[in-house]
Length: 433
Figure 1 (tube, one colour):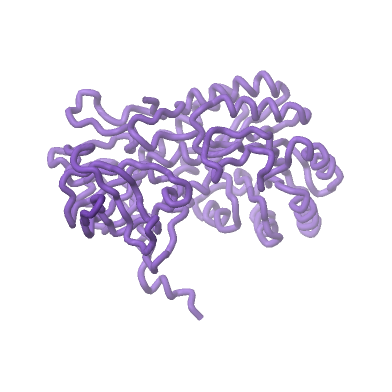
Figure 2 (cartoon, helix red, strand yellow):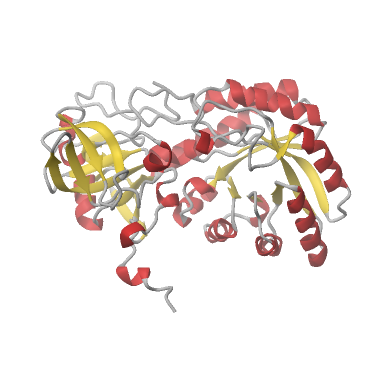
């Protein structure tokens, strides 16, 4: 089983945890799950459930593996946090402290990145449908680079930059017609994609940017998909970029997959970086600067979600219903994402017990968080944990059925701090006029 930074548990531990839990997690003497040195039962009592619990040192460790690993392989390089994975101000702040740059995909993410302390010059603005207002916002903030996604994007940014009286450095997003083995909903590198320019169209787009006096094309960008567990597609994408000429900067995107299940294997961060830089050295010898954009592989395994069991119902199946669901983890409903689950207050029995369907509280039959998971004698009041929810949990959280969004809690060294409070019913009506 590959890990990204360090072992999750001591191999001598009689109750070892799955690799999908945050680095440093353990089962304490009371049989409770600990995250960042904090007892999750105590966290649930203090902050309520559902709640996103983040191991701060896990985030820092993975950021350092990316930062130091890429720098050792290519001296002129940068690691960009793909912030759509976890757009939380405290996460931005931590990763900015660790020396990462940032990519944002909307005006809202740009505002959060700036609030989190990222230098504007180290922010890259993405998006396949950027509005004029978002481009104006980016130029006013002094964003370093804007990634162009369409001919309309080029025309619109030229107009905005001319009005602002400045020249904007840009990259061109290329769709290399390379698709990795992932769900169609998170595949972006195929020819028929809403993102970027196909190889055939990219040449004309390069000429269009060259004719725009207020834009300076410094390089190319590509991103072929998300949750990819094989490295070969990344190499093919880099080779495709080589056909478009020589550029100063190549942004090789992100997409490295992570383990969501105990026996799922994913490439390590170091092997991923080695594969990228080896391919770039061969196919892109002119590349001065290399960029990568990890999101999921930075944040997914740093976080767990805590729930409280509300009801247990036995008919054809055993239905264990908790106080959250598709309002805090939409991925299982969107594209069948699979997770582990356990009783955090009885972790020594993890993986044992009867086969259950872990269901959410929402008025949808499809609101099932984990199917066919073994839970030992589940009962109301039990504390359920689902690990590996740092990527796209908080990001996709919603108010379906009027459910307030969960808090985000950072844990480190046995101390817990609230970084995003739980929404209230008052928040739900705060925008009414």
